[in-house]
Length: 199
Image 1 (cartoon, rainbow, N blue to C red):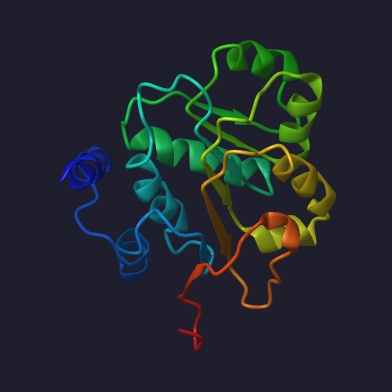
Image 2 (cartoon, helix red, strand yellow):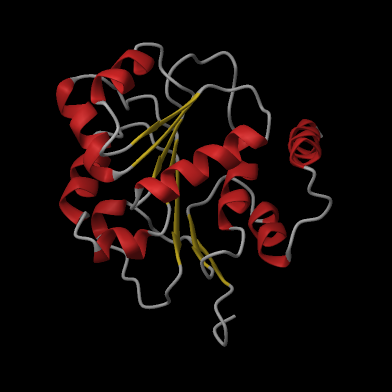
């Protein structure tokens, strides 16, 4: 299968020989249904959601195909680093507060295949007309519990109202207590829990 070839090549590029139990479970769940992934920080969630994403991307569409929202600059940059390590060749942009917005705008003039960023900065670009999210097919809300904790609910709600073409939503959290607001659009998701004592 082409998908397996894509993933095998990506793993080879990273030097990873085997996936952990959680990463394999996410991969086995496929890419058609919404997903809620509960797993501790540092467990390899980033690779877990990026590998299936790779199989959905195409060279033919030169617009933004996936949007990944992270609660902090550090996490956004980490996701970008992992994505680049996969060596898939797709353009990726990372936008976050504290980074010159003019620099980001110039890079966004040629839309990335994957856009990663913090809620405030993504919304800023959206309101300035620097990005068009109509073509986004996959939405990933990484460490969603942290985004809510930091008060980004309004920003995320506004961003998600500009995603008419989303086909799949993935939400990750390091805590079991996270409630999924209606604005996420997540319904009947595949739910995978790898939190201690909750599996």
